[in-house]
Length: 192
Image (tube, rainbow, N blue to C red; front, top):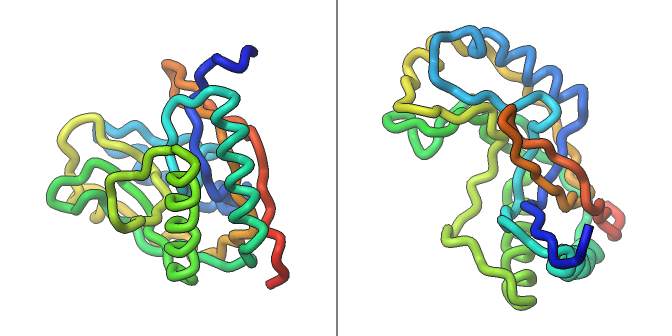
């Protein structure tokens, strides 16, 4: 793989495999509904912190260097799975997701540090002003019907999610869906 090759990249908080399984089990009844939804594969469930798009290997290394600087100043914190929700809203749903609760103020500060530090290093900032953290479960391919989802959804796990590292991930698009692979794992350095 050459340095000039482009890789679709994003930063994320990965979920424990047990939590991925519990979320998938709870979403099971939704998978059977006659809706035009592309569901996220169990092993791909995560919390995206920043989507870069296509980056060169050199830019990935540059981003990882900046993320290490951020991680040196971070302490572990906890999030918790919230409610099933729709983005941008239930009237015009495009994304089916789980909201998050817990130490959202810490997560918001982490996101702002990532945005500002990477922007100072030459990476474009996201257009949004505020981070809306969630775990994507599926995306409507055509106009979505939230009422059907809400009627058939059972309770989802309210497990805690330990945030103690940032993952730099590659996303390879395939006809069956994206394949994610880790490019770097950047642990937080400060003690909790």
